[in-house]
Length: 255
Length: 226
Image 1 (cartoon, rainbow over the protein chains, first blue to last red):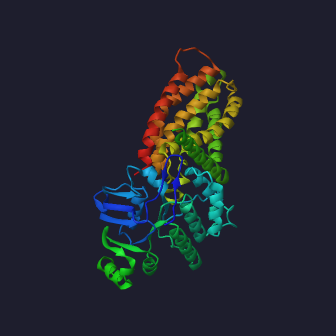
Image 2: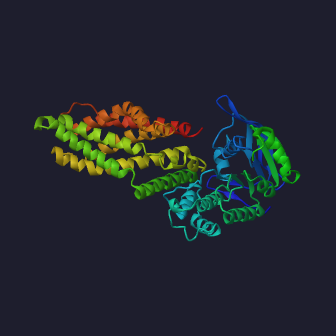
Image 3: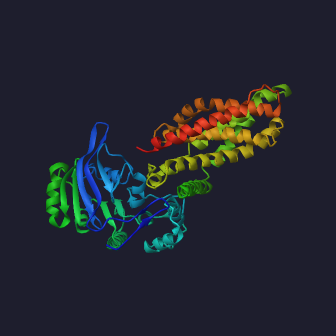
């Protein structure tokens, strides 16, 4: 992993060495009222690795990502990002993660460039304009940079969302179904970008319903069913048939 | 410490700039608020058919009712842009002090209400023929608006998570801002026709502003976070 430092006016964090875990979750549990959504989820992910988070609808994938992204608080258990607790050190963790949820995390009435400059200011990045320009070019939005996001297609908005997620050079990127609504070219670009960042040491967790792609594009896989971990291990040890069998147990065999 | 404070204001101003920019492009708030305030003033003017002796007694009330009603329209839209995709995740995922979000939304609301007041006060002075266009009106309007916006911004965040937000917001805000509105009406009356009742109305507004600001800034974090 190449050396990469994350700095801000408040903190200067150097990510964990490749052998150390960037993400750890221990007995992570989340309940909404009496309804458990996640039950005793434990796993860890080393620096530079990619984890595919799989499971049928309602398995708890988005909830797990939201807990790691500090957007929700666990009912029990704990999780850390680069050693920082997601509850106690939430603001430090927010500097270390990039999160792209179901909906593009950008403002429709700002242009693509304005969006990136706004978020650069929110992260206190002194070189915001340069980073924004670089990312807009990299995601193929230079020509649309000064257009309002409202005029973007779903794929263009998703590419801008990815640029926004990478803007502050996070140590961990959390992607919730990033390929939803994207055409093949956009998926290819997304994959290329992520590979580039992974080579630079970015750790990634993504959810997808494209099981084959999920296994192929990840080092490790975590399968959730009914909020419980039913598989955690190397993606290479998992076949599509295994996954179908796992899903079939609780999801009626649908994928 | 200095760096944190600098970042706090940088983030606050960035959010304020974003909100104003979005409003200038969509014009969802300002136009409606201003038109509504003007209509209220005109309707009151006709409804009361004011004679010279009545003006000072009721006109300041009409002015502040216009401001309060128009404010509610704007306050209801405080988190509209954040919620256009269903949640405030875009802001909450940023490493930003929740007080900075509150501060930005408060300043934005004050700016929106302030524009309406700048338009409405001269019209009020002309329609009701009262000498309110003096420097003395500035602190009254500023402090009264701060009180309304301080509590309104907090309750707008609370109401934004509910389905009946348009109904809920005035129900929550109106009772709480009564002391500020009373203070502002009486201070405006004192301005146009000093009777010297010895009550420091401006001081009362300041006291409530401090309470509203302190409580709202602390409470805001618990309202927007899970």
